[in-house]
Image (cartoon, rainbow, N blue to C red; front, top):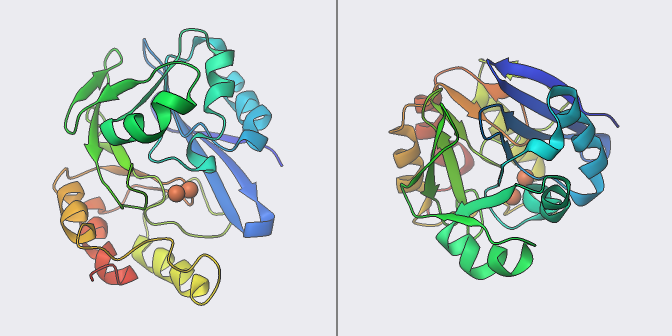
Length: 239
Ligand SMILES: [Fe+2]
Ligand SMILES: [Fe+2]
């Protein structure tokens, strides 16, 4: 396995590993700025590979922020490895994540953002949105990079395949197709239908993103608002 690095927008790099056994990509997003931010620390077992990918772009020791959505190995398994690599780096997360997991788990205390609070990294602004149970997990949050209007959307729109880095086609169909394949298997139920899903997705659509940075699948540059509005219906997330 190797990390495939694409500059998907100016100073935004997608670091992708394809795990054939699950027919799934694992993507990490590196934003260059005065204070560089990596979104998705990634699996601990992938750390040497992702680190190599970061090193193609910048000195990994200069990372300043490590962001992620929820407490799960592919989101933040390698968090402490990054904190060791980059002495000036801190985790950045929401209030619930900090309270129930990260303040204890991480080797350095996180920068905690309240719902709607902004982290400025230079010319970029990252707004945190608490999104409990979306995509899953009580502690879930997402970051919205306001300068480029990019939503870091974690597992939302998850789709299988060793797909292209950037895509503007039918994202909902891809997500629906993978969801169908998961039915009846161990991954069925990965995205819970709770009363929180429809209003949360509607709130995300209201941001009117220009890009959706998916952990699993292509970076999406199509009609993001419509895709977000259609996701609850496509995956049956309306309770
Ligand atoms: Fe997840
Ligand atoms: Fe994931």
